[in-house]
Length: 175
Image 1 (tube, rainbow, N blue to C red):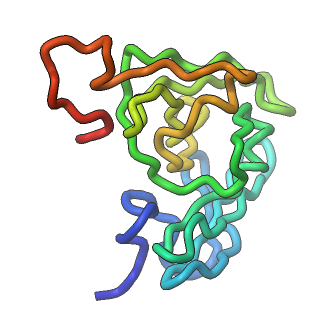
Image 2: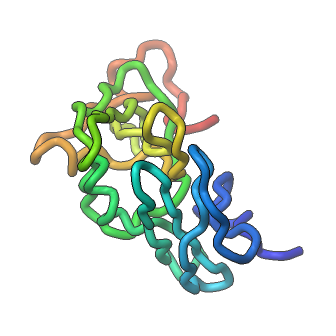
């Protein structure tokens, strides 16, 4: 068997695909330069909006060969996350009990974006950062911590927390 991204945090997202940098059409980002991470190679994304924009790949955890994306470049799209190297495919489920993020303008465009609320495996609400621009551009971060978006606020509890009745053994984030 080969290690083509089927292990660790890169599951379900093709950031370790075939070699080379392909051109990205609308909704089909090209792959930016790669960085080594344990047994894997972590590739970034090139987003083709009004202009081409690279989001570098990063090594979220070399011990587990888990890839991520350098989220510092995502600030132009609204998210400002506490940890620069965000792991791919962070676990969580969309949850109507979790509020969506506030709308944020995308620098250099008239497009405001919002992220849907999701329930993280830890039982707190987060934001789903799998895509932007109404699903046209795939990022694949999964359900990220909402605390950095909340200006010091505390994320709401969700899933199997105290607000759920008659579901004593439920597990948040399963699927």
